[in-house]
Image: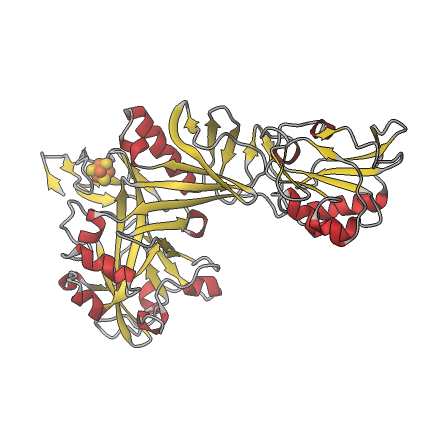
Length: 490
Ligand code: SF4
């Protein structure tokens, strides 16, 4: 912090270097001038295991009473980086370097709110519906913020953000991208428009809304897999089943499952490209109707039945991979399918398909690279931190949540934002996202990698301060302080 005039102070927590007058906040609303002091405005978040056990809430110092004077005994609390603040420029040590003791081993946690220019989110949307062609742009308020990427089993995938949208386009593109990432990472909804595709509302851990319709379930499998799963339940009750799917449409009588059950040939003919027996590609165009295709009339994917094989009265079920769409037909004198009511015994199988479909959700994974500011705030020799992470000597967490660190160079991590405490993310108007990150390692290792050992302070000294809030750790997360003193498993 630098005092620039009688009343304004300069914030030096990021490259923007705001001048902040008394009672005002900086451009990111994270720092303010309170009575001439630069303060981080959001509360600093501490995970407290006692709360999740339902133990009575006691003051921090009581909870950590057995502190021996230099190192805190019980790892009942974990100081996250949420609200901890950032140090800038790179060579300054991280805001908090904290000692604790885990099973008799002295540990250090380095805590900072990282400023990520290289970051984005990967979004998994559980739906069969076609959201847009791969590589097409995803827009918010008309600005490109990402693109459609390779779909996965039962889910459509988007890649949003990244340094090119944040910094490589117009100022508005960067700002809208940053705002969208911030909303998604903080668990808010974002309305996305895909070029030549759908509009979709995405919110972490909530069902997607595609073209205004709430998606309820993801598919049980591709059309071929659905045939395989349910063939035995259809056997004897129906002559033919077609499971309509944008990727692999399945046909019971031709499929290996039907062959094993000795289902007779029916003379059915499908449009599209036959892959292997009973499996067809591209029976229609992608869309938001039956099985992620554009068809509303399932008969449109059938060619006339082979008159030498088919017979009058042949029973045909057509169903989508979620069971959302279905129709039952019987062939008339001219071997034309005529729709009739679905018999009760087949209704059960359609219900079974629906029952086996999991609830459709959106998953949002923050992905970013821990660059110079972050690593230099931990050690004077940043490559040693990278190596330490690689060798599993240093555990990385985001707001106490576990992360996946990509192999290869650097510290490129992914974290499920729904496993982090609420409102863990912020932004700076460079534009870049601010994300909490903690590095935990043994004190001996921290010294060996050139850490700022002289800046280590016991956790109890932090807990004396007001302005910190205790929250329960999420039950699905492992406790962020490693057991066995963080020794790598043999
Ligand atoms: S944008 Fe925020 S962090 Fe950056 S200088 Fe201004 S107040 Fe400080």
